Amino acid sequence: MELQSANPDTTVHIEVEPEPNPDSPTRVFKRIYICLDPLKLGFKECGRDILGLDGAFLKGSQQGQVLVAVGLDSNNGLYPLAYAIAEAENKDSWTWFLECLKDDLALQNNSRFTFISDRQKGLIPALEKVFPAAEHRFCLRHIHQNMKLKWRGKGFKDCLWACATARTGWAQSDVLLNNMCEVLNAKTVEGREKPIISCLEFLREYLMKRIVNVMKVQHQCKGPLTPKITEILDEIKKAAAQCTVKWCGDSRWQVQGTLGQYVVNVEQKVCTCRRWEFSGIPCKHAVAVNWDMAAHKQQVGPPEDWVHPCYYLDTWKKAYAYKVGPINGPKLWPISLVPTTLTPPLHHKQAGRPKKKRRRDQVEIEDAMEKKGKLTKKDGTVTCKKCNVKGHNSRSCKGKATEGGSTNDEVAAVGSAGGSAAEE
Image (cartoon, rainbow, N blue to C red; front, side, top):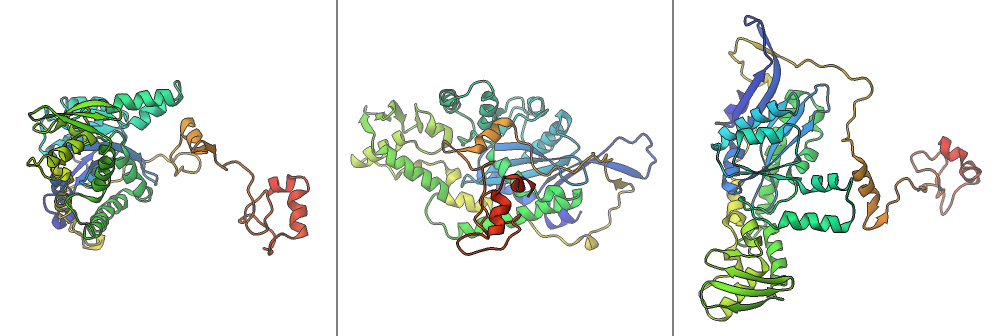
């Protein structure tokens, strides 16, 4: 009630566990879905029909999952749309989450929307049930990670990327990775260690502060396009200088590039390389045609005019014109007239110390140990910054810092047989 009073038209759905006794005054909490109205309006202003879906574990006393739906703004930055706390990541919870999302976005069953995910448990059948006509992309990084267990090497990786980029999509985005969800999970990891209500408040405050931070960046921007898209187009212009253009007399041009020969249709705004249609940003062949048209006195604007409107700076500012309103503290929250009382979900404490970090698989560990073709210093011999003696670090150093060297006691303690270093 407090959240909806500060942000009218905010969607909040709460579901409870089935109760065999209908006269019971309490209900056990099961899941909650929240879609703040400012984010709902801002996402529609972005004009990019793509959403990343992901789930992350709660790390506090309560077990469960934080489900998120994250879009992209005009600067290729993440734009969180909705979040939920559910009991688990399965078909039932994802179906419920997507049904709520469909109502907020006013989508139909046959909507040509695009989703990208890491192939979470239950998400694939849930998407097929709720959005049977939608495009479902899989994060290429996770596909490659699974593929590396059997097929390794640069040749297989290049084939995979060639297959992933040689296609078109419905959304104005060439996104192949689900990084927007990964970034949001990393930013909210501290909140997932808190109880349920505190976790929800942490998420809301992060979303409120993020809008302000983006606005500060927008005030420093100039030009028709957003900063990130401007950088991308500048790189495309450098590559377009190497292209050769020939006109056939109508709206089509033949362009010879470094990697082949393609046809650009300026009337339909497409190129046979598919990058223009796929991303909404003119490819190098289209930019070369634009320059050729201008050189021959044809009526054409700069290449920036051929960029999709979703990448304009004005579009970016419109998306962040809606602010998440602040709310009062719990002592000032209104009293609900609902006759039942919500109780926390049942919790079974696991043996041992709770794990905070995500478990990495063997492929991730190997990739982390290798950087730019060279092995990292992980698991190698360290050198103490206090005494310059190998075998321990400054935190476990028991001697005193010396100028340009170490004391004889420290050298004897560490360098005698290596046993003392192991003990330390």
